[in-house]
Amino acid sequence: MSMPRANEIGGYYGGSGVITKEFRDSYTASVGVRITTNHLGYFHFDLCNLSEFGDESENCFAKYSLRFVDGSDRLYIGSTGGLIVADLVWPEQLNCEHCVLRWTYTGGNNWGPCGNGTGALGCGPQETFVNCADISIAFPTTDSPNVYRPDVYSVEDNFNDEVPDYGDINEN
Image (tube, rainbow, N blue to C red; front, top):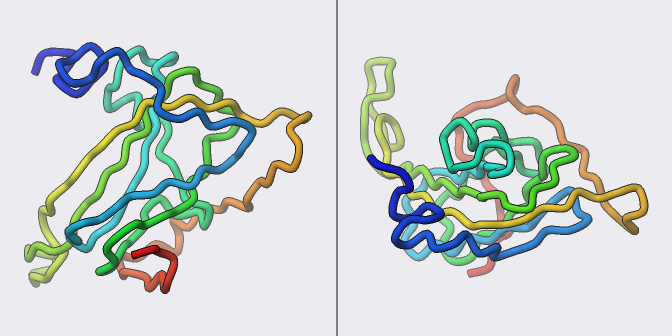
């Protein structure tokens, strides 16, 4: 497909890349997604710094795979609907005048082969929904007052595909 694609900067819908949100003096950001039809599954967020790569390529998004404050890179939503809010951690020392924040929602409501000879809901290919926002980030400086830095840790060694129960973290 030729570049830019319709929803990218310079494309038919992409416009000129107007910055929709500026994040200043914070290591984290609360993001909200309103789910009107739940497909189970999980959310994942990536960031592309256009100053480094120039366009919204997969290589650009792969550099900054974002984590949530608990250290995970996926937020399993269960059967929750309505507004789902979660806190993301920005990459260390990242400043960008123009970044693209990409949200990916991978569903889990389709039946498919699990790879071990069985089949189940959530296995195999799933629907994927993607949306982006043009943002800017100014990382906190030593003069930034009252800046909270979460303890972020890797959960790769303890990762499993079970859907955790997040309780009442969401507003319906």
